[in-house]
Length: 475
Image (cartoon, rainbow, N blue to C red; front, top):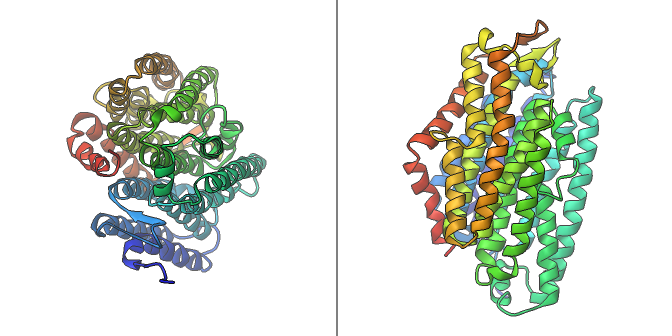
């Protein structure tokens, strides 16, 4: 029996991220609580090196086809690494200020990014599962990372339970798919999907539920807002982005690549989930007074918008999903970054009311937050506008006119709660117990996020060309 070919050059980016995580974890033992800026820059250098390798490593497959490096891998791994790099820089001063275990913190961020990278490069359902667990387990720990905060401990336990449900459904679905197909390879799934099979349909349904928990789409979003509210602010920002990247990477691999030949078998189910997500998340966000919960429901709503591109089931839809993930990472990390710059009586300023009068205290911070809110709402000249435009265009071309109408109406509803945040910053009186606590590196990361939102909204052509490489894989 010939052993499977293994080409370690293809996984050089993953090896770099793994090595950086180990080095940061070991180095963190010498710095104690609060750590040292050098740990942040060690993590950043590792991520930058991995991103450079992603852009240079040639395509190919390894580990008997379980690992695939193609255009989809290139685009989604680049987004995951760029988002993690921005999150590392954003959170550095918060970690020092709150005296968290920085070595462990940065190592967990890196390992979670590794999981998203593996999901993006999966050619096999077993690899998807390995990536899903590698992505998730560090996030459970990070959610409970503020050991003295009861809310954080509760968030960690709830996220762990959510993850357990996700794992069980995904594994059971994987077993049924194997029983129906005789293989866990996505290529074999594509060949078998052409014929009707109840066992295969149930297996795919369970896989969808497992990934639905991770993407936090309705009705699998339970406790997600509680987790977002209780976790430390930079952790909430990071998990809101990296979990979406990993989950939608797997959804693209399974639905728009492996099951592309028979979209009628799954598109209607995903469309119903999409509509439920858009309606419930936007209506629930209208009632929120906590900024983290507001952004949690915003994250759920945007998962619905991204899912429109998956429902389309075309190369245009997959390209739209990738562009949306890139835009979503910039505007979500930016919005959380502004909140990271504020402090109330030595604690997180996580209420919407804490933003009152921010424009009079720091016009630049208020302008940045307004930009991120406008982009999240999807207004022109911002990344959010083109992100929604592309997923709507993909859905229209695929014949889902009714879904686009619902998406547009959901965007109109979302404008209210996003603009309410901007209104409070400019119209309300400042609170005496809220202070600006961020430093220059958090500010620099905010500049990068704001620049990304504007560039993607004004001159997106270069990034559109980059994500359009996905069409080589999804046809």
